[in-house]
Amino acid sequence: MSQEQGRPPRLPRGRFNAQVVNWTQMHDCYGDVDRVPALLERVELEDNAEAWEELGYRLVLENDLVFPASFAALPGLVRLASRSARARGLAGAILRGAAGHHGCDDLLADCADAIAEFRKLLDRHLQLRPVDYFAAFLDLLAAKEEYHWSAVLGDFTDDFYHLACPHCAVEVTFAIGDYGRYSAIRDWNLGDVDRRGLRPASFEELSGTGRWMHETAVRDGHEALADGIAHLFGKAECPHCASVFNIADEYTSANRPVLR
Image: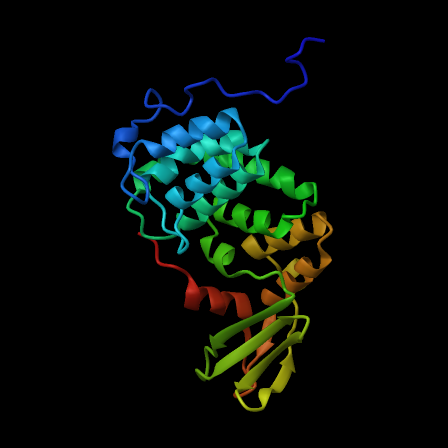
């Protein structure tokens, strides 16, 4: 067997340079156009922690702001993601930032093939039941353009959602986690009062994104996540007016980001 057999394929040198992408038009968060391609070349050749750290803060700010260089770098990051957890995580962060007002719709559209490949890669990764399962689950939601749930979904250990009742407008608190699964009126002195148990959706009642999330969690053996999703996409009773409504539908309607 030759020395090269059995090794992960290495991208050709220069894969990220200006012959592929016109980096002179692709500024990062500092307005620079030369650092990102140089850093991509570096991490392609070696898994350099310092270079990855700099790439991270040049491509995605803490409040999920992304830039032209972020989308220009995305296809290369996806190509590296099968052998680099850092590349996978940074690609996911860029896609989560795609929900914001970045002014790069054309660049995002150009990444359609890379995003489709990233979805497949993340799905395979989830089936391995990795330690970063939940983070990868959220990244896959973003890759599927489910930006709302990617941003707000918790792991159902200590999750609370707040929503105005669609019938009487009273603010209702929903607990789905270790503290219980209920709707209540939150009193800052007494805690959650007048609790009403949630009604989880059955598998047959789930559809769309909720069904996909539930099926994926069940497939991968994440029972707590699957149970939390069933409750989130189930029904709740308002403690004030006793009306019954679907939690996920109302929460999505009240919180879905407005995209340009």
